[in-house]
Structure formats: C-alpha cells, structure tokens
Image (cartoon, rainbow, N blue to C red; front, side, top):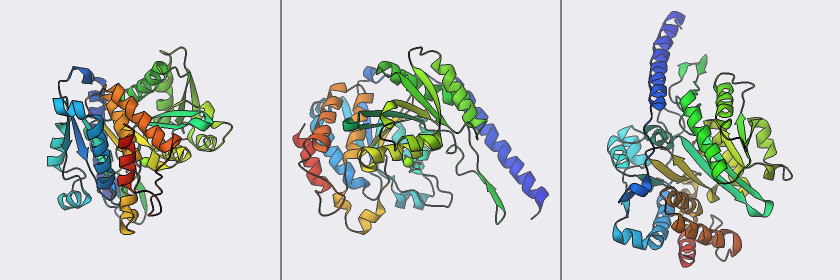
Length: 381
Ligand code: IPM
Ligand code: MG
C-alpha cells in the first residue's frame, strides 16, 4: 500500500463529497414552498409494483383503490398511472438504482405508491428507496404504529435523506486494512424533520416528542440533530421535547408498562430505520405497517417490509399480506387531502385486521390468499 497515494485519493474523494453536500445544504436553506394538493385539478398517482411479492400486493391495492376512488377516477381528478421498469432485472441491466427513464416518469407524478423493491446485498448498487428519497427529496419518513389494546399510538418521524444513508454507497476502502463510511447532518435538513414532527404533535394534541439519538457518541451529527430539534421545540411551548438514547429506547419499546407513554418520535435516518421495524413488530409484524416518505414537492408511500424473495421461491407469494401497502395508500389519500376516503379505508382495514378478522392472512398456504384478503377489504368499503 502506498499510504501517500491512498491519502491523496481519499482527500480528492472527500473534497467532492463535501462540496456536493455543501451545495445540497445550501439548496435546502432556499427550498421552495410545499405543493398544495388541494389546488391541483388532477392528481397523478404513480404505481410502482416492484419485485418479489410487490406485484402481488400491488394488484390487490390497486383493486381497493379502484373501488374506493371510483368517482374521482371517473371524473379524472385522480389518475392511477402504472410505472414500469422499477424491477431488479431492469435496474441491474441498466446498472442504475432507478433508470433515467423511470425517474423521469416518477417526476411526472404528484405522489407515488411503491411496492417493495429488492436491494442487492453488497456491491455498489444503491437501494431504489434510498435513491428515490434523495432524488425527490422525500425528507420525512412518517411511520404510524398503533396497538389499541395497549393504548399505544406512536408516530415516527424518521429523517429520510441524511445520516448514514446520504453517502452510504460512497465510503472509502483500503482493501484488507480498513474502510470508512460517512454520516451527514445538515441544519436545514434537521430543522425540517423536527418541524414536521412538532407540527404533527401540535395538530394531533400530542404532548411530548422523543428525540432519539446517540448524541453521547456521535457528537457532531447526533449532537447537532438533538440541539436543532430543541431549537425547533422552543416554538411549541405545550409540547415536551425529551432526549433519549437509541439503545435504551429499543429497550423501552419492549417494556409493556412503559411503552405506551411515548407519542411522537423524531430521529435520524438509521435509528429510525431500526426502531420502526421493532415498533411494527409490536403492532403485529412488519407486514402490517405502512410508511410515508414526504417531501415538499413529491411524496411516496410504501410498505415498510422488503420484497420477500423467499416467499416467491417457496411458492407462497400469492399468500402475501397486502395490508401494509393498503395502509400506505390510506396515508397517501390523507396526504393529498382525500380525508373522507382515507377514513373510509382506515375503517375497512381496522374491521379486517383488528375487529372482525374473518379472513386471516398467515403468509402461508394455511391462511387466506392475498386476493381473498383484497376481496374482504373491498367488501367493507
Ligand atoms: C426501509 C427499508 C430501507 C431502508 C431499505 C430497503 C434500504 O429498510 O424503508 O426501512 O433502510 O430505509
Ligand atoms: Mg427498514
């Protein structure tokens, strides 16, 4: 190893990364006003079926939306647009996490409903989710979790474009010796996620927001994340802003006598990724949770789980649970201002998943099929 050469290469690499991130931070400081969906004559909803069980659960979700939005679709106020090409085969063939023509199509939509897309393990191919979040600047990953029997009603505001994810495919490696990845926190990026979390708390009568970091270890990135969240919190006098460390928060969520005290969480990207899977499991499994990726100009709604290639290999694909994607479409309807339709869908889902449970999905052939569950939800609309 030529140490001088390694350092010179790394310096040039880091200079480029820092320059790009400084440009991004400046763009965020001067962001345009958010899109107002209520002012649009036509809302274009892009549907990305993805990979593995994705097309199976998308098919049922589309049927549910067609029934629920029959009037809006007939009048042209809402348009469902199928987006082709976000498949692992096409992405690998083109060597791009989101091929250029697919990205151009996505940018013609107002909101996107996305089924899971496979992410290759290792290599340099970025996850399609991560690319989409960055390209469309979907900075707030909003994930609700509720367990009515326990009085749990959590709302997670996970920062979605920064942290370890911003440069996750751009680390430095000296093969056989060491590797380094980078983590990014910007002032504007933190302010906007904190603002989103506190606004949610205020509008929904919540009295506390947990700021979850490892500021005791990651002094710059998490330290500033926490500090900036507290600055934003000062504008919300009725709401308590509490610092928590991520490790103890994972423990708190499994303490039954403790966990229902939490209401809203705001947290950097990677911790949010981890904690929301844990939370979804408490709700009944990752298959039950929906997820919104909100930006000021676009928004994307998805299941929080992956494409489950094992289910396809084992011939269980048709028994996949579409609730997560249906739940995601409920969040989408709420986001674009179709509140009554969202409430109707929420009620139908709650009857099917919590109250009546006449059709039960187990992800195996002993349970109901995805299609049967789709019919069940449709019958409750
Ligand atoms: C999620 C997923 C993604 C993430 C993966 C697919 C890259 O786990 O949306 O939580 O890590 O953000
Ligand atoms: Mg995740």
